[in-house]
Length: 196
Image (cartoon, rainbow, N blue to C red; front, side):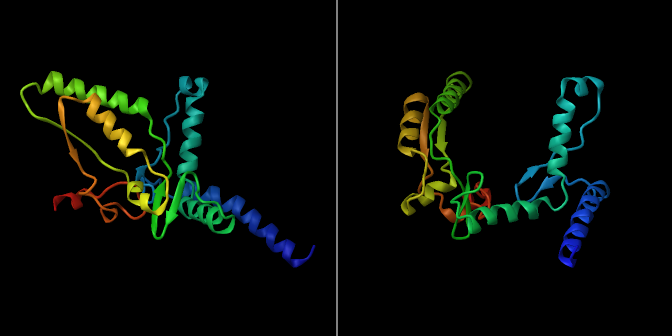
């Protein structure tokens, strides 16, 4: 066996040993800063959960979310798919200049109907003697429309909101928000930018 194969074998064996040991010794992370969400906690074992399979599902999620250097490996995977393999996106996320965006260009009219019904019911039943207002907060992709990237059909969304929530006055935020009002690597808007 030549020295290259020996080095590869040693690195492989070390990774097989070191990763589980690191996972056992390192404390669990409560949140993922890159994903801006809570991570799974170690599930409590119960016989019932074990037999119906939920314990194993929760344990699998826990191990995948608490994996050592998970964020680094996610970054390597995304960069490999986009830079090396030439994919336009990775898991529906794509990069434009220095920002991260999410492909979501199809308006789900069922969801709009459901939300609009709830808002109309709330306005009609709970705020009969008050003014009701409704606003569509455009997603970050809205501000890429001029660059030929896919965006939701905001005209149709506005039509549906106007027709299905007659009790509320519509407020337009399209001209009030700008791309700089959203996080660079996140799809969410910065609430502190709305004060101006």
